[in-house]
Amino acid sequence: MNALQQLANQVLLGTERRPPDLAQTTGPIGDLAEAANTSDTPVEVQVLRRAGILAVCGRAGHVPMRTGDSLPPRCADESAARLDDPDWRAALSAVLSEGPDLLRAEALRRLAEQGAVLPPSLLPAALSLAQKTPALRQAVAASLGERGQWLARQNPDWQIALAAAAAPELELWDHGSLEQRKALLAQLRAVAPDAARERLAAGFAEFDARERAQLLETLSLALGPADEVFLESLLGDRSKEVRQLAASLLAALPASRYATRMASRLGACLSTQRKLFRTVWQLDPPEAFGDDWKADAIDTTRAKSETLGERAWWLYQLVRAVPLAFWVSHTGQSAAELVQWAKASDWAEAVMRGWGEVLAREAPPEWIEALLATADAPMLSALRTDWITLIEYLPAARREAHWRPLVQNRQRALGDLLGRINQSAEPCSAAFARLVLKEVRELLGSDAGKWDYALRKTLPEFICLIPPECLDEAGQHWPLDKPDTLYFSETLARVLAIAALRKTLNRPLSLRKST
Image (tube, rainbow, N blue to C red):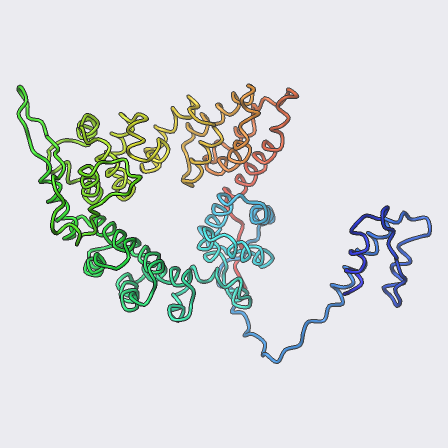
């Protein structure tokens, strides 16, 4: 135990309850400690001064452990331009250390867009960030430059930042953990989907059921017709979870043989009937379980907790395996007409629940819009989703029209709503940004603002998504002249800081050619 650790142990209970024994230290360090304190210096001040001296001298006098390893190769010369803008560099340093992650991603993206790399002094912070935050690894890897890549290779904990941009390390398949194998397959699917599938298929039977299911999930990345034969072979897997996952992946391939078989079975449940002066579609679930259905991972019996009856249970399984385009092509009706038809059906719960699973897979905008236009609590319950999730399925350009009434009507806490909006990481329009800022200011003027704790975290993150022309407005017109709004002062300080940083990040960089 060194002198600094001994001193720390002595003052754990406080200097008043247990006065420390400040034994004299010999040599130059002792002379410095004696000169820093006098006989009338309070004991707590003496402790702090001695601790500071011991800490600084300990770092200055540290002797690294000797090793027989050779020195690493010299770092290659930097080819990218150097960041020669002190304001930009200071903003970048603040963003990397304080966040939030949305702002970090923007800063790194802006840096790469202008052909620059991170300054050497910020490389350790960026590499440590990539180690802890998977979502930022790709952005950090693109901003490292030659020196950053060289530095990352010297520390095993930092090498994960390079993995985002490097070729997959195929040896991990034989010796890595399950998580490493999943990461390897995901990397390989991005560049060579067929090779990834073949690697998985070659040793698939050797894994246990849990491992097979988790590894199989990676085939959802770059899923294509070439995967069909392998997935068909898994419909007879000994694990129910694997069988159902394979069926779900096959259902995501509209032209697959599996999807065709399921569409044929569902089509047999649909018929037309003449009523008065019009023809209407009739839905009649299967009367009996098909002889060949089990081979396609359809369950004959439902769980005891299942709310659907037997026939509805079979119908739901057929519906969830068929693309939504089938309904339009088979019936000739639009998505809006089919939603109204299903709501009035005796089998609405089974159909809606099946559609809910297909929506998560396909999310065609016309279907989402139709559901949002007519959705009510029973329908959302049947779909097993909520308003916010339905909106999130839409393309970014079409979400704001549905966010707007939720913000204005405050159907849920504004802080929670902003949290969901922030998850999209999509920049918003100036009009929507101004609406949110207006609603937040009004909320702060009421007692309700005190209880929206989530807003204190989500509003600063939302400022990362507003367009640059709104950044000045983000710091204006806040109702903080009353004592009962002081609780918001810390949040406002964060809002102003993020707005100032974004102003810097959105102006052109001053660069200098590397030499």
